[in-house]
Amino acid sequence: MKWKEAIRAFWLPVKASFDLTASERRFVLGLLLLFSLGLGARWLHQRKPPQTTPAPTIQEKQP
View 1: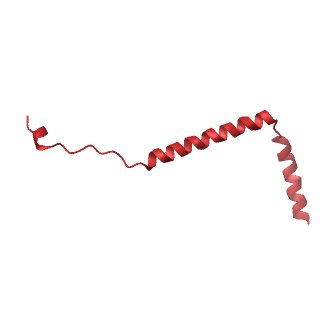
View 2: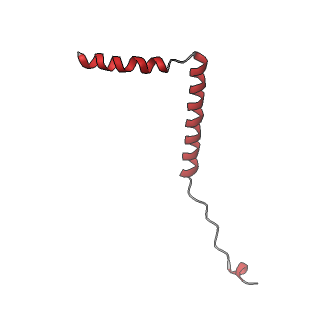
C-alpha cells in the first residue's frame, strides 16, 4: 500500500503546519461563519426582482 504511505508522508507536514490552538480554531470558525453569512445575505439580496418605478400617469405628464 505505497499510495497510503505517500499520502501520509505528504499530509503529516501539512497537518503540522496548520496545528491550531482552540482559540485560533474558534477565530477561524467565526471568520468562516461571517463569510458564509455575508454570502447568504448577498444571495438573498440578489434574488429579489429589481424594483421598477411606475410609469407616469397622464396628469403627471401635463404641466
